Image 1 (cartoon, rainbow, N blue to C red):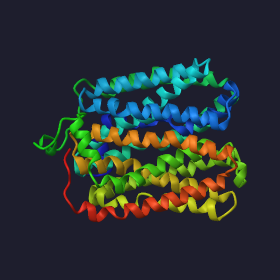
Image 2 (cartoon, rainbow, N blue to C red):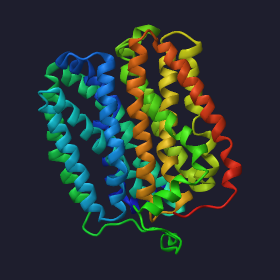
Image 3 (cartoon, rainbow, N blue to C red):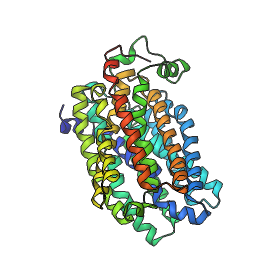
Length: 408
């Protein structure tokens, strides 16, 4: 089925998924980072102390995500998606009303859980339930919300911050979620709406989703040790670098305006790589394409490490965006191919919690390094080395995939 025919047939569910990935931006690091200078001033925090607070909030969300995420395998889609959307609304409202650091901490937890975690999880899990012939396209289209948010929202938020108090901006965000997003989800997902899953969902060897047996089967699968490093490198380094690169951009001669403008090629490459990867996954499978996941990011990190000049930020951001677009489609398709679709919510929530855990550690580590004499250039070199190691590990996965596929 072509992209156009598929969009026409599934326009309601695809719009639902794109809406969730777009609105997940309000819990993503790239958007929260725009408020960091104001939070540092308002609560008298250093880079390291805010990084610790942000890491603790994200880590708390990581522990909650497997339990909250697996519920999508158990309850109706409409009920689950409205629960997530209402949680995102409450998160933005709490941020707008944060008058004490403890309230700020609670708001950050909720934003990371409902935004970065559950909003993305809801969209990707729903799209991963499509059959093999359309799964890649469904995931590619749903992932468009990520770069759309990254392309549109930073400029809008920067404009609002120049004219309004930062907490007033969060109040406006809460209003947008309440007035537009929640009613949209109510309209798009009718009662009883579910994606039809392949016949494998009825296989006798599948364990019930969310049970200890299903989790045990996943974590004892030897294949995941070749996969996890490549899965975690993009969120880990994007979180750490994006959160602080505006504050310490002068280390590389970059300006805040230059970095903001680099989000345009970042978003464009993320969109293109996501759209291209969908049909490739449908044709060749996510398992066969997995070793190429980190290659664009690896290439992008070489530019700020080995070259100087303003132009490096554009190539770096563009190629990192390409890996993120590719990853957004590839990961969910990979879990569906490896473990089946009946328990895809359970599987995806477990690995999403690991991803969130990596984003929890990244601000703390990066903030500590910056406060102790490391430069942004040092961080880029470490990112390049760890990404290269992850690429080498991922190359080992193809012989492993020639073995059996495990059903959870």
